[in-house]
Image 1: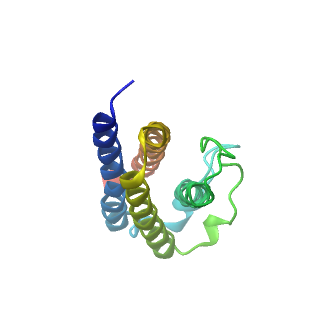
Image 2 (image 1 turned 30 degrees about the horizontal axis):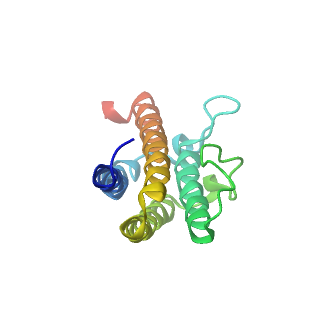
Image 3 (image 1 turned 45 degrees about the vertical axis):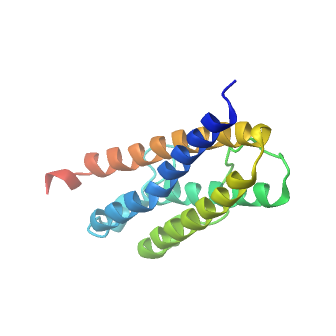
Amino acid sequence: MPDEHTLRANCDELLDQLQYTSDEVQALRSVITRVPEDLLTVVPEQGKPSIKAILGHIIIRDRQMARILASGSETTNGSELGEPEEDWNQAPTDELLSELQENRKSFVDDLRVIASRANEEVLTLLVGRLQRIVEQDVDAFREVATRLHSGGIGAR
């Protein structure tokens, strides 16, 4: 088991990666505003979310995690999001991206405060949870980039 210093360093690195999501969203914004709306809302196959829904799932997960952290309860492991709370395909793209950026910034700021006060046991749990969130973000942004590329965005 890593010592507290190592856990804090790992936690800080993971929080930095989550904070970087805002930069990724800003870069995505410059591309996605040129994308036809139907490419953002199309469901590629049954059971798979649209690009907008993928981004909405990140918002939902961040909201769920913020609620869990605020309550101190461990009611979910954060890996299953369930159905979206909103119809993200109806959301204006710019508003969706803004909400994603704002929620992530607030979420990371709250996590930094929690991490700064956390003992070794809490840090261990937090690092594990943050690793899962970062992995989910990587998968989500990779899927968005793949769909945008396969939709011909890179060829224009």
